[in-house]
Image (tube, rainbow, N blue to C red; front, side, top):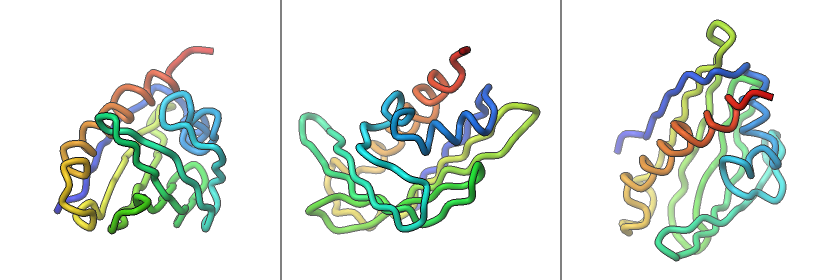
Length: 140
């Protein structure tokens, strides 16, 4: 299965976007309510996500950090087989930030409707295409 890749040019500086993807208080504004997060390799965190009323506990572990450029963490589900990886890559373009989201390993999850690729595509498209830009492009 091909990975999901979503790219977007954000009208915000890299520092602002990096903070949005690594600061738990910022993350609550556009992503998930994550109790604790540190952009440090080995840091483990979890959060709940829902699909049609079913709650899924996401178990994640940071695997790569290049400050203001790249963040990767594993993404699996409590009680289910499989492990995937989410990578955020940032690059500066004329004062704006190009973000590239890649989600690999979806084929390792059980063949349940909840884990269908379309669901991930829809989720990431909303997060990277709408929610993140709305948050980071707000003028102070």
